[in-house]
Image 1 (cartoon, helix red, strand yellow):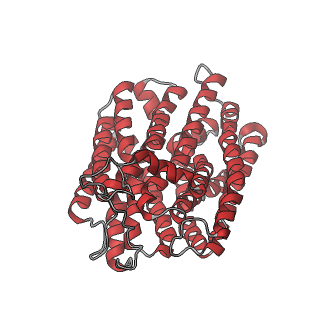
Image 2: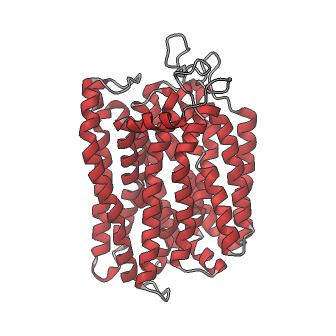
Image 3: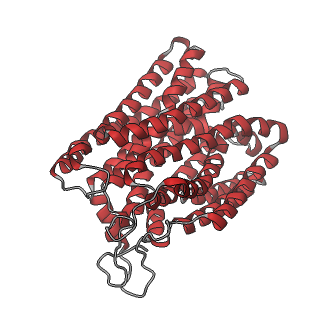
Length: 456
């Protein structure tokens, strides 16, 4: 399902990385191509996070408890994580436009199904379909970015992509939450499904994968030897930068993701006694804080790639320290200002997770970039799955009757430190090896990343 560089029928031609190919142009046309592709990601984030503001409503609608409710988000994250390598291979073979069209179709069908579900089984199936579509979007958008922008601009454009996702998340908190309580379940989720139809038409009519005159990625569409899928995966995984990217993504993003996707509103309403309106505002603070963080981190990493690991560890350890203060606060009710500070800190988690994808991009050649990005992108969704499931199980274990107290939430949220500590250990193990390879010049040379400065 991907290019075999050794195959005469599928010669590997690195996209926009050879002297005979036109260099990535940048400019207005490039930004237009990015805008069309990122519109799908915008809708995907809305669909993905819509359950976060509807968790309490979903529990009432389907008559379920915390562990059953967490099943929705766990299924969603698990499918997303497991699909990243297949999606990377498919993007490498069929191109991002095809995958964006397929992803948008599945997203739309899943959200329509969820809008009309009245019991847990069809709702789970709809959420699974949505997750398959969601899994195809982000890696495809990054693949669109490659041929349109110079390599030195890729970290910034990737962070801006994350900002657009944050805007979608903000729309979930600011628009979907009040709409859900004023217009009801079916109208709210049906309306977001219609957004999927709009972006599907937009991509189908307007998106161009590559600039005029640029080489397309080599795809194994001609007759010839069977595509070598496993060697492609093994080669990408064998690059230490890919594995470091996975663990950076694993460690940085899950605390904010698990909070925004499912447990934020229940924690703030049931655990802290806030109104739904105040809880939605705090969730919006988390999203708003992520918006300036993305471009700032993108510029920093582009100028000082050697700081990538240090930035990622600073973000995750700082967020973990703030959670420790919140969870240890006497009485279990920290002041509102401390919750605001925590939301701001978690706002940096998503942008920091994109550092992992930058490691994958900087250490792999273009013909396996989709595969490597898919591997790295699995990390945060695996850790989010672990966090979501662990919190739900601990809540039900501590309060089998469903009467969740501040103490119950305090106990359950301690689970966040399990994936955090695992990820930090793995980053510290891999970072010296990647830095050594970069210093020796044995990593894949990528334009815009000088080996002496990578310090990965």
